[in-house]
Image (cartoon, rainbow, N blue to C red):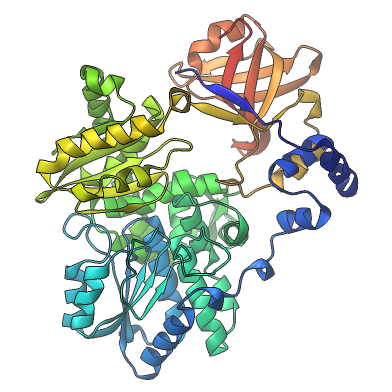
Length: 592
């Protein structure tokens, strides 16, 4: 598929000029700021200097006072507290956060955690989980990253005199569960100013409020921001507002003093190297960062490994990894989880190949505007990853389904500007359960409803999406020349981080790019390792990597001029850090 380049031109030049002057930066950088809604000095200071003082009062969230009072009462009365979370990264980091914080003042004998089994219990609060709380004498359950639609489950818990505090960030249904407290800023009756917290982020607001109420040191709370940063990255929530502040400080923690579990995972991902102060004394060896850990590293290196336990075995191992306080224990758990992640890759690669083959053989699926695909033998733990891969390949709303006990269960992924949650909601009468976000969701249905669901989902998508929206689009922030990429430009650009949804790494366009003669194909000729310059400034030479662009090698090597869209990043290789252009797309001038 060809990608349409959408070049951002919607800025007020006078505001750009004024901002450039007051900040002492060039107009390209001030243009990037204006594109992000930053139009004056104060807004720029807020953006470039995130501060924990920018965080909102947690008591602005509806039911926060009730949640805090119930936890305090449980502590004072010696009640047992169960911390219950979803089996993904957001859920397990949230459970680790609450568990670690409560250990500061509640006996470990009075708190425990519970992660539902993906296959036996499914997503969210389960009857089995409630029964576990009853049988083991837990009076209070704190639920994280799920529960906002668990109306029937909470009613069941109330019958058994088990109190629930729900901390969720998903869209509520028409009815709010009758729990002691329901913390979710997406509630229509919640006036909390920021609506995009992760599930772990909601948990962070809860312990912040608890800390304030108990008059405990706030540093106990801030010491857990690394977990919040991992959840923000892995759950792909917008890195704007509070999330930007939380991610910024969480990344600082990870880079300066990572908890043993994260350090062990980073080591397995080769982000750390073992360095010895004295080679003859192995006890003095320590892990040293190869590179600065970024949001991207959390998404692609940390997230999949933490997720792997819940996808293939028990997500409770991920919580144990994150709460581990001894390096030896953390290393043992990280090694096991790393092995599971390798096995997960084998599964999702195999299933992706099977799914692509099914689509290629089915003319109806090939010509549809959506993909709904089912195989009862596919592994439930990886179908979300497969859905993402199919979406990347065909660029259309996608649902991948498999069998789970007596139901069919699936994961949905969407494309830019299409709300897949609404599309699924339109078919809700055919479903047993569903939930999620605009771009990702989960669902389950009875086998007899599959054909009708597939038909109605495709009907909805066809009516609400046009052909242009089914064409991949690359948003380009700015056209620049290589001469614009000065050391100061790069230095200021790095302060735009952390990057993610709502503040993506800027994509630049440069025309008249030519090969220096040193570019080559790499990775079995799938990718291009570029060494390029620009026609008018041959003295400006840049290294770049263009993944999946190996087919362009001959034309690039012939020194045919081309246009290139790219991000500017740091690349660590063999102990050295260099500037690198991460090339997103290439177009030649002959209409390619």
